[in-house]
Image (cartoon, rainbow, N blue to C red; front, side, top):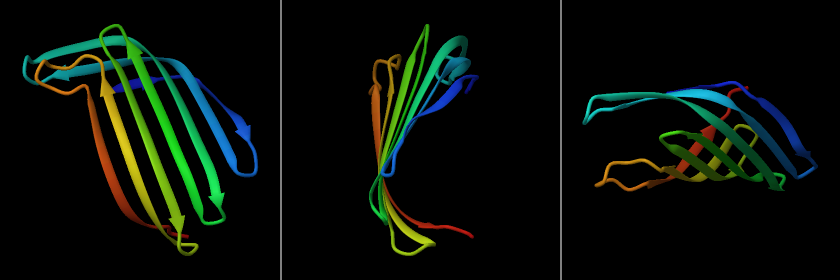
Length: 123
């Protein structure tokens, strides 16, 4: 788990493009189940959120999160394409990559996940 405080601002606020950024210090606590080891340390946390409106009903969304500390750097990128079929219903395809710099010898440093979702918005 991690907890961070920071400052966020909107860097770009155009008709089709929105870019938000956040940066700040925090604390991360991890537990390794195999060795029963718990580590706590300070981190720096940064996040970029990009939304590009391709058409009136289609948007490309990318969120990048990086948490870096003395014993591990964690990065996660979420890329998604959302297509609205109506004001309440949309299809969303997504791809996520998660990277840890400190993993067990038999583990991969980067995992990926591909998703396809049907999104319903309550109004």
